[in-house]
Image (cartoon, rainbow, N blue to C red):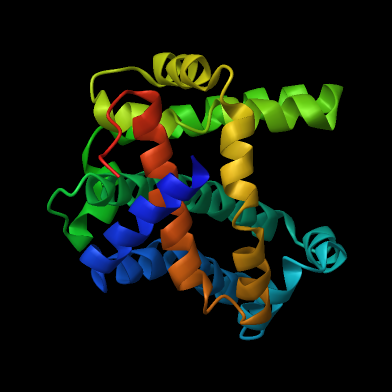
Length: 232
């Protein structure tokens, strides 16, 4: 099945290029640029390079946090919260864009910001509920946390297809859809491991293609769960 998902994803990539790649760049770079902008205000002009390195060197991040003043700490917490919210809304909008593209529907770059315009609070609540569930299960052991992440992986798509559904119901619906299908999604994601390595080696440049490719393949996978699978 992975070959079929990926084949359809490649077909859609060709049909929606270059717009799908521009959408991927916006969804990926916007949170990073915002983080760098606010970081410069807090730490100074070197924060842009620091933020890129902190993803690898966590000790450096903790060292910076330890040396914050009370005002800086409050600012850091507020900005972190805002960035998390913006990232979640962009992630939802990008899923909205790619799901439409995977179904052959008309798309526009403005679709990426759909989450900001249509009931953003339920998206934010869904992100909070998912993170809490995954975190609590991860405290028990790593494997339950990973399984939970896969169980709730379809939440954004469920919310997109069911605009009146609550965040809690969407999470539970995702869990039901993924029952018995988690290994299949894991296998699909694992098949992109080589692309992830290439993206790291090219400093994310190849990720513009591979991230869009993976997202579209995941959209096709979701439609297979809801019996809305495209003809391959």
